Image 1: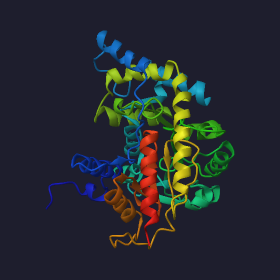
Image 2 (image 1 turned 120 degrees about the horizontal axis):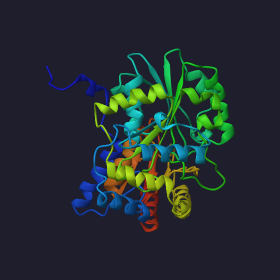
Image 3 (image 1 turned 45 degrees about the vertical axis):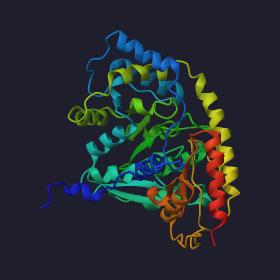
Image 4 (image 1 turned 45 degrees about the horizontal axis):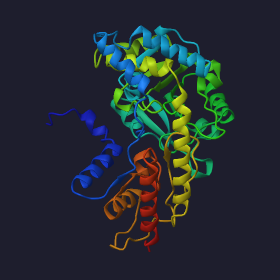
Length: 400
């Protein structure tokens, strides 16, 4: 009998971490590798946020806090949600965790029973289904398509809901596609959810401030206030504030759910890093000017990548509304063969061959639940993106 829990048989390691690790190994071996796999801004954390952390250390603010966050940060989160999203919450309705992932996981562990279904549109962030499985639930995948710009339609949502559906996980702008739902598209989904009062909404708003052009972010409880009592609005400081390593995520929702999540966290990690919490207070409450400046850079990079990938033979790349990813289709490449005689039978073979032949690391579409595609993170320098896209173009050109 194995010493390890059989629960682990239901989950797999994160494909994005596997790709990043493989790229790092090749780089350490002397290969010229360009990593486009990691979902991490290449900007430094803004100086005012770093200064707030230094101040906290200097003032001795380094002790335990409440298990799910200190009052000052919870109040800053309430202020942010009211200011940006027209959502009114009290501190008792807020939970702070060690990153957005823990917030989602705590909610699933606190609510799922055997047989409960969690509806997840595909393509999805790689961790959603595995977190559901770890929590004892059943992920139900609703596939979108490039024809709808990878967005779930109201009819698809209606068709996927069953009496066992407990949660609908919603992510806009999306990882991995960058697609965002406008107010009218989201209202069509919330109208469906109103007809199914047993379904709760878990909204992952991590890329809220990374939106481009005329796209305007909105979140489900903002669009449909009648869903307020069964919506968990999740967010964090990782992406927009370039604070991935600080590990602060948060959520706001019904007080009974937040209390249950607090119980889970109190018996697992307990409070997030105190110094990171003080930094997050400054991130949410301090100057926000750098957001627009950073977005200008991301828009330029997005346009560069979309244009160059669409010039690659056999690749179709939609232009995303936000985040810092593109999700090109390679349906025209499937079945072709590399000069080394390797047939591109699926997107994982494509990504592996691309890395080995050109040194460009991307994440294959099957990891996100929709193929044949791959994900590119353009959160790196223009120079790296140009070099990588040229290599991808050359790789596609010689396929037969």
